[in-house]
Amino acid sequence: MLKIKTAIDWEYFRPILEEAVNEEPKGPGGRPAYDVILKFKMLIIQKMYNISDEQLEYQTNDRLSFMRFLDLTIADDVPDCNTIRYFREKLMNKGYIEQLFKSFDAKLREQGYIAQQGSIIDASFVEVPKQRNKKDENDQIKSGKIPEEWEKPENSSKLSHKDVDARWTKKNNQSYYGYKDHVKVDSKSKLITKYKVTDASVHDSQVLKDLIDGTDRSKTVHADSAYTGQDDIIKEFEVIEEICEKGCRYKKLTDEQLASNKTKSKVRARVEHVFGFIENSMNGSRIRTIGMKRAQCNIGLMNLVYNMRRF
Image (cartoon, rainbow, N blue to C red; front, side, top):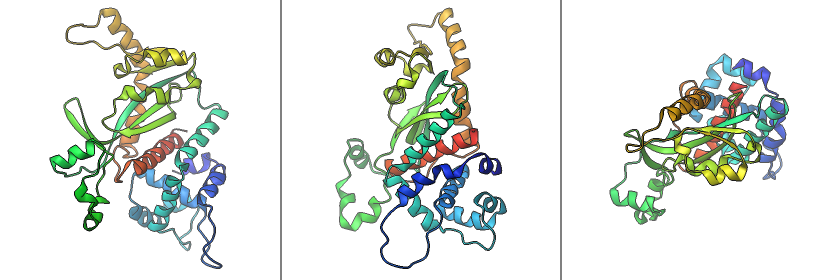
């Protein structure tokens, strides 16, 4: 944690953060606001350990390591959980999380940490608490509707606890409920250069067009066999395609294809190190929020914090 504190120029983020929270005062006087860098660094700590707002407040008051990271002393006031929640909601509602990620990415490129010799694309599940709905309610949610019973005034509290954006999916006979973090990773540095958040039911290949851009032109793009069949996108951006080939029951892969897949996988496997670190060191494979907007905010922060730790 202290290495991150000293390695990163936190003032670099100040203009974006101050623009995000800038608003007209409601009246004269009042308590001075906490510094935006302090609140931003608290969000960074929160995603490092994937803890709740309440735990963030408690642990900041309790742990000297957190205080050192935040440049606080025992005598200083610590922003409470509601202050942090309000600050994060402002960043989320104004779309500044992705802007912070892109700004840090630009800084890494400027300093030469992103080699830009090639990319790896993959996706990982980010689960949320499972919803206990009736079958007809799930059918309405899948069709993009909110069950009429939930929209009644007397059920307003129930609706606020229902996630109508998350979806179920199955992979390798295991069911998942929540969202997907689709990422493009620099093959040399293993830094995340671009990401896209969808519900869990969206197939990996459908997001390829959102991850590949002009920076990939004439460079290699590694991916697993889930991304096959995207020839139009590959041709449009003129990338050097290094996608593993897929066999099936009636058409087995040849020895040459298997050897080619093995060679490609030596590079492609590096993206699993990214997801492994997020899941094992940051506990980032699960979030406790409701709705797509908050999922995008939390997953975006998670990807930003991973890049900081990798840096």
